[in-house]
Length: 527
Image 1 (cartoon, rainbow, N blue to C red):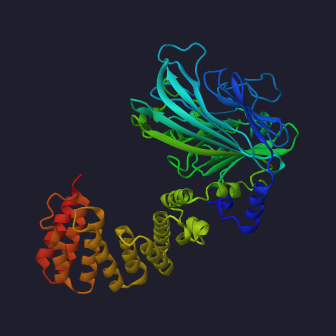
Image 2: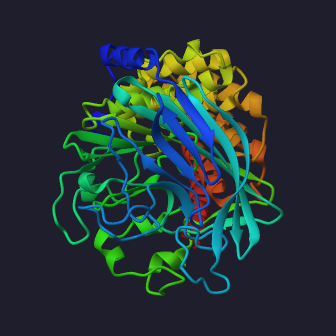
């Protein structure tokens, strides 16, 4: 991972927090007939417009220099330097192009039956003004006039120094009495279309002065479709000074870190419902048409990224915008992201994502100094210590792994998974069979005999150690707890058969050993 996601040194972080703790400007929210207006110190920052189109959106969005930082078109046509494409790219909005087959991303002027999709305001739950302004409202997503889902939206506005602003955009999607399927499509999610002066290039390839960069160091066209914790789109506003819009993906979100449908012509979208659509080449999607408007897109047929929200269930998604001066480094976007994701749930989400992506060294670089044991929630603290201990073990740092795992066990002594990891660390890194046996036996004592992965892992590990200690009779006795292995999952049956084979070989029982190995090989050869 590039420098953007490295741990932030103390001094800039203190400076960052100092900025947010200064006396803030006053935020006022006002409900009008067709919109909710947000002002900061009496000046319009943005408006939630919910009546003049088929879906709500935020426009204008005034940046730190007093100029709009999102595209005016189509709300205000004829602005010099703006492309007049994609009229559904309305400043900032959230939607998706395949929700139970309805396209809420854009709606044709004269929709045919089965194609009508609109989002209507149901009610405003609360609205507050002050140093931070907040509105919570409910929308109904309607397909052909019938309810598809309800959406709870929370918008919060926090002014920073020098007219910079943080804006939380959180949604809860609630399925009603039937499941809701979000199809694997590239067009969907939380979007912003930046001002024309800020784009990297036009759709015709005319070069602009903007830049896209994400938390993993991908820039401009290379950022398209990539997964990242945050993405920043910066460039000159109408004054000629550089400003930016950064979007943050919260680690508790579905499929964190999200894919980014980030286009050099000015679009930046966090899309967690698309997967296969982001595996292809960028140019593929300039010629392919997705269903229902075309049939030549193979990603549309795979459905591998489809997400189903069961009837009555809720999906919560958290995102934050950071409207800032300068580029990503000047604005300390990484530091702001770290501040946004500093709670235990978020830290655990970031750690899990790094583990999943096998970015082990980056995980230790970011979280090696974190004092998880000081967290007030013991369950989360033990999980974080266990996870970091696993990574230390993978990196062959046995002593650090042992320290973390013992600290985790102290907080959660009945967690058999931690005992298993501790035993594996003793075997693989510290060459301490006695301590490993004790850990595996404790795990087995907690789980009891069974066919789950934990008791089977403990059993096979104990048998292997006893065999290596030339105690094959004891190893066989441990394995015989499972009788003839009938009904066991094939993978585990193979492992137990191999453990038997090694134990019989250590006893000099060649025929019995070969019989077990041959049975294991026969199972492995099955399709």
